[in-house]
Amino acid sequence: MFDIGWLELIVIGIVALIVVGPKDLPVMFRNAGRFMGRMRGMAREFQRSMEAAADESGLKDAVKDLNKIGDVRKSVSPGSAAKSYARDFVTGSGDKDKPKPATETPKPATSAAPKPAEQAAAPKPAEQAPAAPQADKTSEG
Image (cartoon, rainbow, N blue to C red; front, side, top):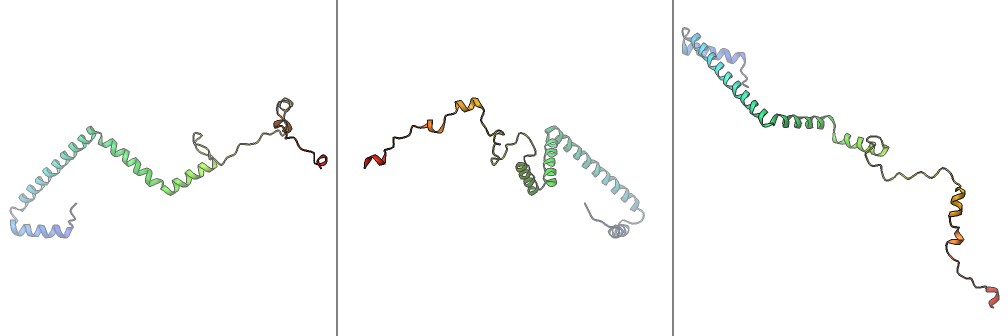
């Protein structure tokens, strides 16, 4: 939190030695240490009470869920996710529940010749529509 190096501590110690005096300096440092200890204890107690309140309200679970979402976003970029989805969609690999692309055509039947029962039931092209009577061009004229 505070960036106090050794040089700053030496300057503070020299100023305190001059202002307070060598006789009362250990007592002052002892009191400052006790004060810092009390402040740390109060900060720890406050932090524990805030964590307990977060646990009771379910905030910790929500934070975990948000962190999971953030981890997923970091591990998979949108571009690579789109590419893999498109590749799976085109190749047909992946979940069986996914719809197949519309470009697939049904495979034709393996036998080209119809079976005898189908031949009798199937209408012939001449029987489908009656032909219009044709006039004989040779007899007319």
